[in-house]
Image (cartoon, rainbow, N blue to C red; front, side, top):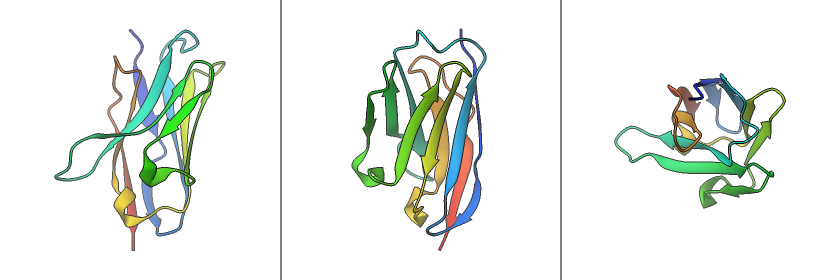
Length: 111
């Protein structure tokens, strides 16, 4: 079973950018879909973005035009580029194969 480790979280000011990385312990080439979820304090976990094996992407409306998900199958890594960050983007971000979950990385956007 693939294990996932997220990195790249941190504290950034409103309007800033961060790039999250999700490194998989095994090959992700054959994994159909991978995604990023987030969970803010007191809220349910929500799907932020997902990417298919062939590169098709989907985003939650609140991040469209600001976030970009990508995958590098050769490096077994999935990325989430986050631009124009807002305080409401503050959450723990989790990478998932929809079977396995990473431990999460904290993103805090200060106003």
